[in-house]
Amino acid sequence: MSGQFEAPGLWRRLACMLYEGLLLFGVVMIAGYLYSSLTQQRHALVGTAGLQAFMFVIIGIYFTWFWAHGRQTLAMKTWQLRVMTREGEPLTQARALARYVTSWLWFLPGLAAAGLSGAHDGRSIGWALGLNVGLYALIAQTTPSRQTLHDLLCRTRLQRWRPPAPATGQNPAA
Image 1 (cartoon, rainbow, N blue to C red):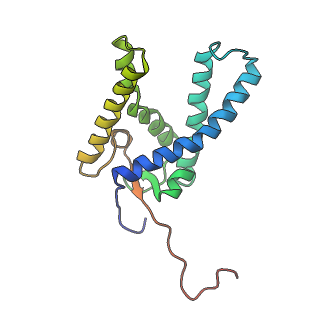
Image 2 (cartoon, rainbow, N blue to C red; image 1 turned 120 degrees about the vertical axis):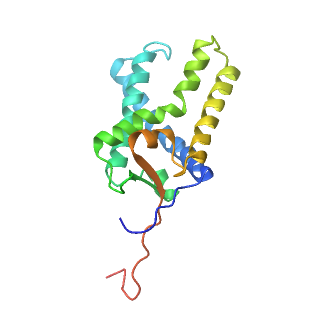
Image 3 (cartoon, rainbow, N blue to C red; image 1 turned 180 degrees about the vertical axis):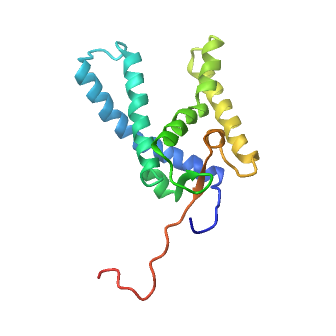
């Protein structure tokens, strides 16, 4: 790996997550349509567990494929980020899958806390999620390498990455 490692800042990460959410909206819409067509789902509240499991798998395929093949999703490419092992190598499919599963630590503890406390209203769930995401972001800001918990657990890292500039004197159209 050439170049120097530079961990991205919190705002760049969050902007990338927001853009990723916009892109995933299309993926989720198409996958939801496919699921409802294949299962003949006629009501949104019927078969929700199966739909959620299907979406978890589809989103997992999206992330693990991009992380293992090119180190970047489209949102990561736009925000000049890429993921790699701590040693700077590309992720294997297995490590990308482990990173995807552990990345749910951004949300699951907050959702579990809200559910276990009996909170089912949007405001309580929003507060629990916000607190969880805030604590998770704080971990990334306080670790020496500025990496998130799932990156620490999976021995991966997120790097700010700029594509190399084209060599001068060469004709790019040739």
